[in-house]
Image 1: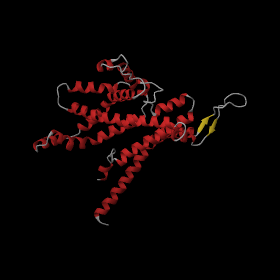
Image 2: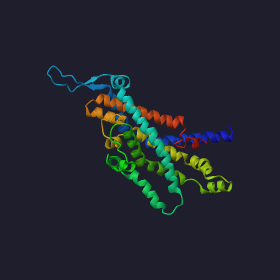
Image 3: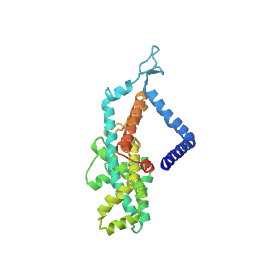
Image 4: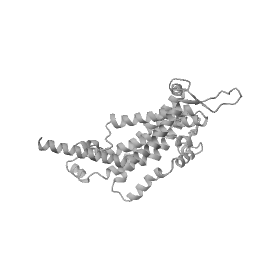
Amino acid sequence: MSATTSERVTRRRGVGGDTRLAFGFLSPTLLVLLATIGLPIVMAIRQSMFAQSSKPGPDGFIPKDEQFVGLDSYASALVGENAGRFWNALGNTTLFTVVGVGIEVVLGVCMALIMHGALRGRGLVRASILVPWAIPTAVSALLWRWIFDSNGIANTLLNTQVLWAADGWAARFAVIIADTWKTAPFVALLVLAGLQMIDQQLYEAARVDGASGWRQFTAITLPLARPALLVAVLFRLMDNLRMFDLPYVLIGLGKPSVETLSMLSFLETGSNRFGPAAAYAVLLFVYVLFVAFVFVRVLGADLFGSRRRDE
């Protein structure tokens, strides 16, 4: 065995030992996560296969026992009597996620560049940009509800009478605007952390070579800030897919144009239809897993630095 081969074997054994040691230290945490995350998922799947009886029994009272219905709740949501409402909620969830996150990424990168620049009063600018992110979502939704009131600031500035809180595209625009204002600073904060890790000598060398500002941005800033940007985008995707409180407070329930999967599950729970509510929650969970898998695997998001370790 050559020296190089021996070094490789030793290194692999060391990595294997470190991996086992790491899992040993993490095992208590993994057990807690399994109990707090895995158990509710299993219970939700189990609940989705049962339904509460809605027909009165021989005594005239509705029995409280559950009936096993198998995959009927999923079939009803996907192709059955509730399919129209489910696909509408799925479309709204996807719309708010794709459009909202897309706008937030563009604005977040711009705000990060502004906060990163050497300008007078940079601390005040950073604090003012991050204020919306610090406001609770419910409070933010109430603020925008006043703004989008029929006699609110939005209609006054636009010199029109748009019913933002009614059903329709105006309500969708209101949700997207409020969500962007609330969470774009979060993207800016993570991107700013990535910008501060870039060596300024790279920009000096680029300027010496005659690179324009746009060329520096595309060749230096974006590639080196990419890991932080990907983490921000992934977090925002996961958050928007679970959107509930913002449209709930800003627009309200019973509005098909802004009804999301989380709101649909909530409404079913309020109607004591726990089986369909659990089915909607499980379908949303599968959708979130699918989006995360596509983002991490297909788009090549190296969130954990595995490529660098392999090199």
